[in-house]
Length: 80
Image 1 (cartoon, helix red, strand yellow):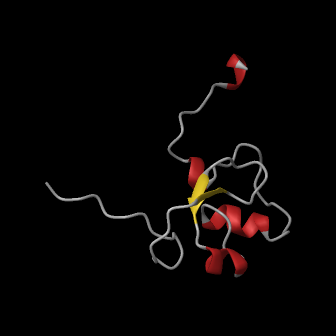
Image 2: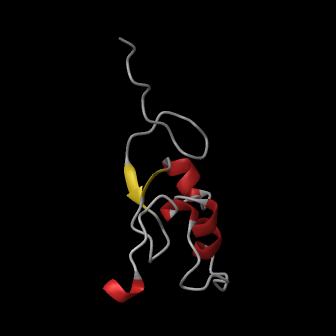
Image 3: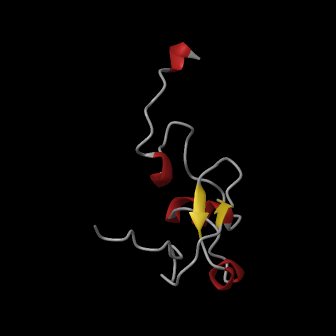
């Protein structure tokens, strides 16, 4: 059987296996970004979070889905 490929940095593709939390405060996704890419500002799990993490005003409304959470099941508002 084929060996699973080693984990790599999300941004540059170099071997990297240390997960960090996405830099956007409302996102709790783990992201693989190597120290070089993190120093370059690549600390988010997806482009949407990366843009928000750069201090720009979030244009998203609370109902807008983030790329990183698109696959999550929706919770009906009346269930909260």
